[in-house]
Image (tube, rainbow, N blue to C red; front, top):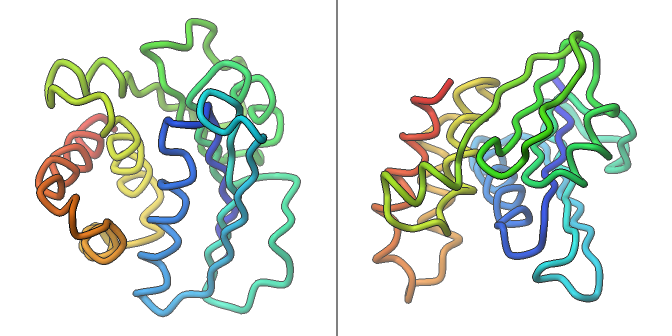
Length: 178
């Protein structure tokens, strides 16, 4: 089954990392994957997004115009990609900073106050993207949680391995939000 997703937000929010991590986890499970990042020259603070396709069959094209999953971490991304979610698709949005909620009624909408939770519960806002990723994995079961943890351990540079337990906590906290 083909699952077409877009992760979007400001550069520095971990958008590309989320996409790369879920793609790597799917690869570890033997699935077909495409990962296509897009970001402006300013990157940190500018807009960034990545399209991730995961399938049991070969993927014909990484280019997608409608998505099964939209993850929006800022208002410009929500405004741009909410209309591109497929009917009955999933929209996850960062609700502690986006104050204008989505308006569609034909998709499944999940507000996650990831920035607030990361600050209050985990004392580190940098893992807010892992909270969102945990919620996504719980909602759509595209990869196993174990595969996500393995991907984290294999892709995170060794000098940052001390942060793996914190990232695992963030994934678990995100899963508990949906």
